Length: 266
Length: 325
Image 1 (cartoon, rainbow over the protein chains, first blue to last red):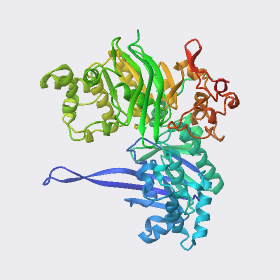
Image 2 (cartoon, each protein chain N blue to C red):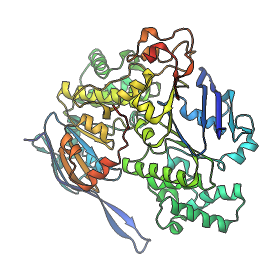
Image 3 (spheres, rainbow over the protein chains, first blue to last red):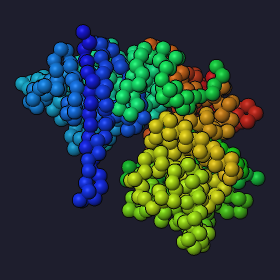
Image 4 (spheres, rainbow over the protein chains, first blue to last red):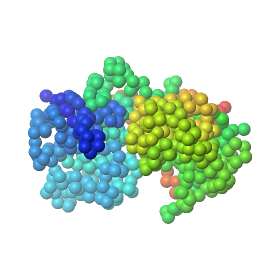
């Protein structure tokens, strides 16, 4: 039984078009019939261009956008049938990491209050001492010095900020993490640090991860399997190496060809 | 005689927390029709050096402390003053920025923005400027240019907007094009189109290109000569083929090693320990010493900044024994 199963998900948006009297509704099919199954402990890479629907898909899985049709099944429970309150409870099990840590952290909250808030969603009755211990553990887990607990996001570098965002995602002890372009905004040298951290976390904490990126070399490195998305549909899915070496679909081939390569000889 | 020769450029920012030495003695030259690349992490000073050339820095807090930038034999861009600079910027030296959404004016139609340089620098009348603008959009591959030109930037996709920026930067046939991370915000497939487009237009017009990016793979595809910047200085320079086949400086080697594409799957990615040095502190000795794992840290210079030398024919690097070993 897969850990997360997505069955024939469709997320359509209505778009207004035309003048006041001749108004018609266009349907934008952002996600158009996607089925994926992710096993426990697996990292599934999701690649595609902007506008192909990969972020809409991730938000549909998170139940942030209701799907037009289809089911999201997490550990045998159909999330699409739950009401808002139950979804909020279940959402502790799946957390998100976003691309831009500058935008996704509250600039007016210190690391301490950000993490404290995230921790108390799962453990509402911790006292100050216990909370402090939990925050310290979290910060060390993601490679941050706990001395920086009282600092604000703007006092950190981009890489450190992404670490805070990761710590916040880990705080409610999730089982599934959806990472939406988590390293795209970072420099090469910082990028490798964050990738190492994510891989360690998945191994040590037994997490399952959906890793969304447009950077194929990053996905190739981190993912066990890759799904290629194009215009709201999954056009190809397979084991990382076989997909990279022998792409079947025309679009996957085009995508692989356009990746710039370093022309080194060794 | 190179088209542009920058010598010992120093740009400092005088902030409340002290002097930030963003660019600390940078020299490079650009030959006609050639492409040079400037690579570095954020904060290494790559953008600031190019902004200094065109007088685009906010001053204060920025200040150009020393140096010269001789453009076309006679004009020193750093000391010529705003009036002369205006005849150069946007006409003889064009620029493309990273984010086409913020560099295009959202309130103006594409037409009005794209004919502005023609009206200003060439004194063309509106009709013929418009004709030329439509032609320019056609050349960068925008379908139905006569129709699209009346639209606003938000009606274009990211890749299309970057095409508009390229058309706009090249419309006056500049001798130099400065491209500051022009593809960083774009998808891989679009990135390839834009890189191909820049190459194609460069060939047709004979423009020299200064390409700024942090992406080594992009640099290796487009540039002839590569400069690696670290903490406000150039630490290594060679032709792209030489640099990627035979990187000498420890920083360049570490960068190449930390790219996921160069790594076997399952193994831990190599990471450069620590952070780039704080350029508001005076750096004595080798700036990379603290983070140097690949070379021999113990041999790094501690008392004087390493000299930038030609260590092999046409291969320059900072001459620090620790970083080169």
